[in-house]
Image (cartoon, rainbow, N blue to C red):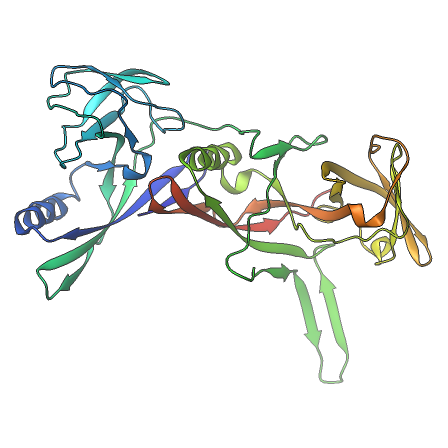
Amino acid sequence: TEQVMEIRQLPRSEINLVQRFTNQVERTRQLNVINAAGFLRVGVQLWFEAREITQAATALDTVIQISTLDMEISTSQEVSFVTPAGVASEAITVLSFTPTAITLESAIGIELPLGSQGMPVKYGFLRATASTNTFPINAEDITLSFNVIEYRDIAALNMAYFAVHHIDGLPIIIDPAFFDGSQRGGQIAQRLDVLDSRTGDIAVRRTEPLARPRLPVLIHCESLADQFAWRQFLYFIRGSWGAFYITTDFEDLVLGVDFSLGGNTMSVVNVGLTEVPLLAPRRDLKIVVQGVVYYRRITVVIDAGPTETVTLDSLIPGTGTVPIADVKISWLYQVRLEGDSATFRHLRLGQSELRFQASGVITT
């Protein structure tokens, strides 16, 4: 299952499902729904949000003991339950919920032994096409895409995953989990007008003061809590409307001398910082001093020959000096989403991959 979030004022989810049918009756029933789905609202069980019940329930129960922590659920939304034997309940409206229970509008209608699971149901409309892939062993895969209706704005920042920039209040992604395998791609993009004349002269006009980094981002979600925190973040930034910070996690600047605590200046090996305008995305830093992380903004750079003296917006607390080897300085890029979309690829319950493309923001 893939879930693409198209994000504007309120995110719109597109859910892509691949269903394999080996039972002819179920296959025909599904195809009948598909053939009429252009006119029908179709309920989609969010299996990747499923939770096991914590107490067995009878068919007459309206309160089901189940954890709703990190579940995208709301009142007036519907939920469905499935037993370990595969027997499913009807979708029933949620009257209220707590972190440990869901109260339903009507009785569940089936016995729920321990091991049964409950999951939210979202309604949507089938997109224009559905594809099939038939196998010579009485099996068929049907690929479906739904634009589903959102029920609740879950925008928030979970501070276990994000920090907040002390100057502009924008979110900072704490962990740089961007690598897929041994490499990470990317681009350095800039707008140039180049005139290559017949006489051999080349005229170049640039319309932006800096090039913009473009980064493909990969986040490995290893739990339901991970997934929910990142979904909250995507709601929070409202797609390409909202900027945020992302670190390179490289050693982008190298100290020329030991780091002095208690001040707001540092001496780095000369890499030509004085030649670059102090604009985002090349003005903010992530500084790790003996394992402690500080986020700072460069305010002044002075060329000192083999080194450059960098003045920060605020001091690094402490006294004494720290050896060069115990300090790591990385760029902190200000970026936005490209294309207003992010994709969760759900591998199994509680495990997924979140991918999106980020592009640098040039701003004072």
